[in-house]
Amino acid sequence: MSNAAFLLIAIGLSVVGSVLIWLLNRKPKTFMSSIDDFSREMKALGHDAGPASGGRRRLRTTQQPAGSPESVDPTQESAP
Picture 1 (cartoon, one colour):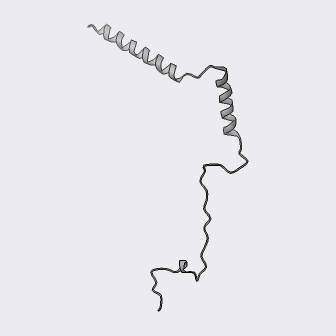
Picture 2: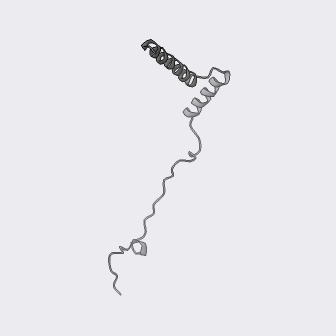
Picture 3: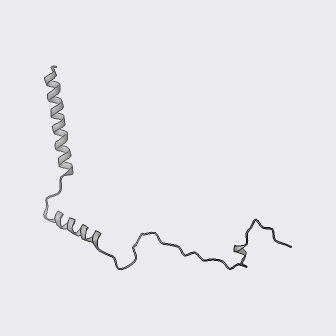
């Protein structure tokens, strides 16, 4: 095989690969695709009235009174 044949094979493979990538990544041209895009963007910009579902919740921490058993330091020995 000559050098020209290898060059033509490489060019052919790159053209075929480029066409496949273009076909897989092109934007859909249907009538409903533009409506779906607009709807998705409006949902992203909109504000929900209720709390966000699935989000992290902040836990309220409560402090124990000074004399409660939970607030006593376990490293200190208590007098019998």
